[in-house]
Amino acid sequence: MKNILVQYLWIFSVTLALLTVALLLLPEKKDQLEYLQNEIERVQDEQKALTEKEKELQELSTQKEWEEVDKETNK
Image 1 (cartoon, rainbow, N blue to C red):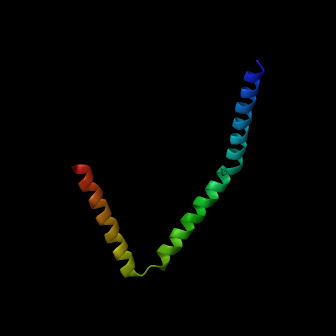
Image 2: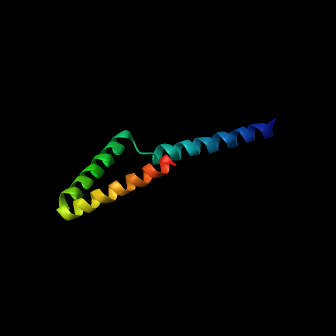
Image 3: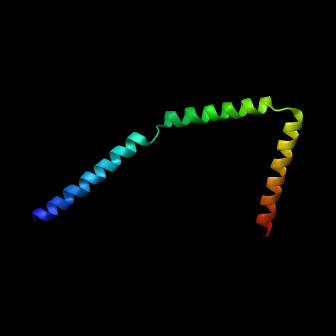
């Protein structure tokens, strides 16, 4: 009987430790929103800094990627 109680105590302790670590490490919704907003601003700033030629090259690259995806899905 004592052996079973010790096993349950270990299981409970390990589960509690894992939950505590998960709660401490997982970001909150507020942090996720802030991160996404910062990333959107960063991408927009990068887009503003591009010259016309760079914008054209980026657009061509995107078109080629979508064409490849279309070819793969049509097979």
